[in-house]
Image (cartoon, rainbow, N blue to C red; front, side, top):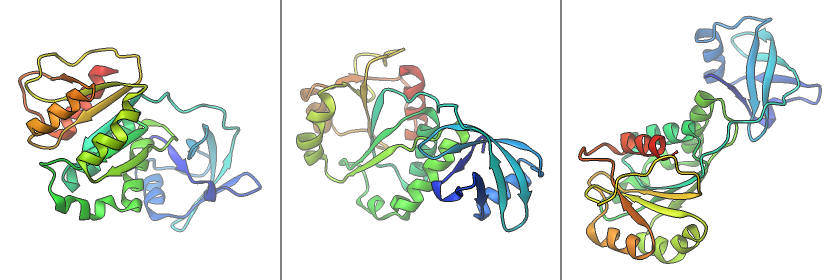
Length: 237
């Protein structure tokens, strides 16, 4: 936790901050080894960052006095990530990684090779998704939560969402065997589509290319989804 991310509910009218949830309290005590008088980096969810003076730390709560918060969060990546829904454990890690890297728009998509049972996973509960996004923000010292969209049908996504997403973005589909390598140092708004374990099926690739997306690859190695997404974002931006 390189940033103490504060909810608006943590703040009082007097400018004090109270934290009572066990996770953040444990991190302050056991990882930061914080003591009253320490000046720590904080940020308001959706707002600016700065410093806060720790004035009290007990097993039940931490109290801070905010200094002026005037540091903006780091810039977002110019990308909308469309990710075929991974298996639940991989989803949790991937959400944390891409949030830390600065992705602010994420669509989780059903494709032929996505197990239907994945959509019933507790990891897709709103509170669980929020938890993973917060962990990514705390790691990267960011305050802006990504927007998450669930798209449970490939054809409706293809017909109803993709045209609008491509209207102002360059569409890139990552898939083994594509003729072109992943581009580098992209500056323009981008739509990045990444398939599931096993990749998109041939019909899905055909439809995405016909819609205006460009196929590209990361080389001869077949990577896990969480590794591929991280490598793609690092190379593209």
